[in-house]
Length: 222
Ligand code: SAH
Image 1: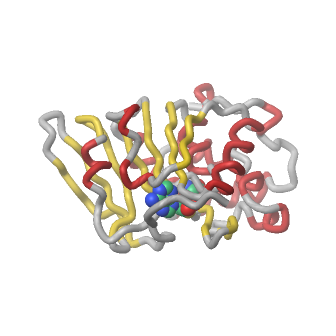
Image 2: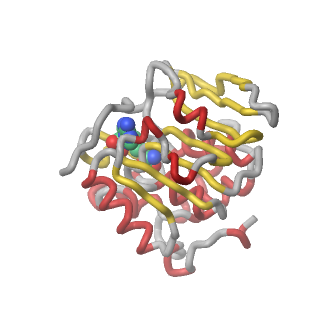
């Protein structure tokens, strides 16, 4: 649904030499089982090269995680696509992301028309992400905090995406998921998809084995 994309034409990078690299990435994602056309359009449209350091921009459309400083990474496009596809299935309007990082996952969800709330523990990364949101004209609400407690003031959320790995699911996050909603999170090396039924029951499946940077306690000011 291209018409729902909120990106401005000047943010699309149309005419960039990377267009062919983007098309190749889309083909690869299709082959790897991403079927939601809205997600594929968003991956093609969103300028991932603006979410990494200039020195890495040439690699931005490879299907790989890349360093973003502070020992953190922008997630692999396939992982972002899988997580996005999983949450879109239950037609969310609001989504909470834990682990803003570069801002790429949040930007993708916003580009798809969701109201995005995102929490990051490293101040420097959050500042960088906020600059990108402004540049791309995306309205995303963000907070510098330890996201393991979620964002209670705006709960419940129709969807929750956790982009850092933990040994177990944080109960506060499950609590802040609305009935009928989907939560995706890497837990113990598996990408977990959890759904809350309208009665509040929890249904859980493993989507794929994944590797993520760890979900850590506390905040970092620098
Ligand atoms: N979604 C990001 C992925 C970044 S990697 C992107 O698209 O670029 C995961 C991020 O989670 C890192 O930036 C890390 O600092 C952050 N993180 C780890 N533990 C956290 C916590 N408890 N609360 C908030 N953010 C956390």
